[in-house]
Every structure is written in structure tokens, then in C-alpha cells.
Image (cartoon, rainbow, N blue to C red; front, side, top):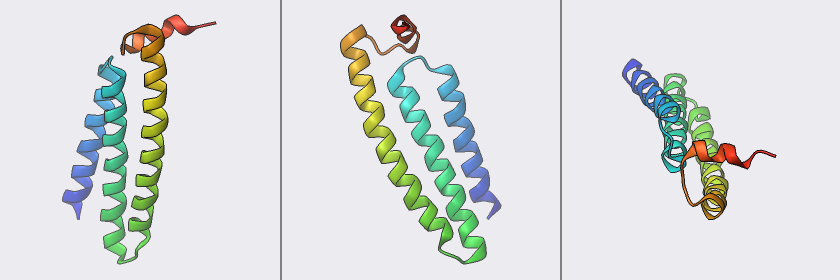
Length: 97
């Protein structure tokens, strides 16, 4: 039980650190996916404690949200790449006003 929550916490921290460190937008998107999966793992582990299907339902909801987030994120990344010819997140500052 605690090992699963510890693993979820470690995965979430790795994703958070990667979002903060990386400059490539695709890697940032992948890091957000790691964080979402860590949250889903935490819901499943917590759901097994109470023997209720709530954790699994929340995990399915998180998977659905992650799929929507990836589709919107990749569309934005494609538009950014076509406009700036780079995937560097610092280059997106040039899009101001």
C-alpha cells in the first residue's frame, strides 16, 4: 500500500522536476503525462484500500483527460513549430502581443 503511494509520489516528483528543467515542449508534455499517470496510480492504490471501484473510475477519468490533453497539446506544438521552427519553450516568448 505505502509502496504504491511512494512510487506514485516519486513519479510525480520526477515529472514535476522534468517540467521545470526541460525546455523542449514535447518533453514537457511527456512530463505532464508522467504526472497524470502518477496521480492515476495514487487513485488506484488508494481505491484498493477501501475496496471500492472509485479509484479505478478516477483512473479512467484521468486517462480520458490525458488523451484530450495530448491531442490539444500536440496540435499547439505543431502550430508553434510551424510558426517558430523550434520546439524551445523560451522561443514562445516571442509570440507576445
